Image 1 (cartoon, rainbow, N blue to C red):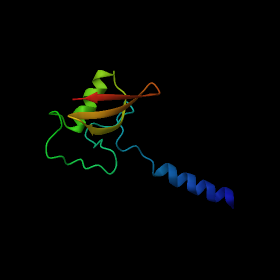
Image 2: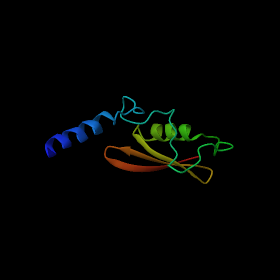
Image 3: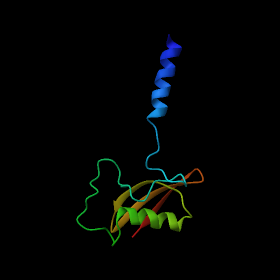
Length: 94
């Protein structure tokens, strides 16, 4: 009985975990919002002339790629967290 219930729970978890926003490099697509949960991504104007997506793309270009974990406003630009080669890197983009 427990084994059958465990199989059902595992199957439901696997079916519901499709990476809809992942691209073929293993990172997030650049057309998805990167702001942390609870942040308002509808800013009146971009910070430092960049949108969050542009800041994420620029951080990836500066570091040879990587998966974008978050983009948060910081000063006149953005603080971008990247995961590359098992290491989390924090990049400031203005």
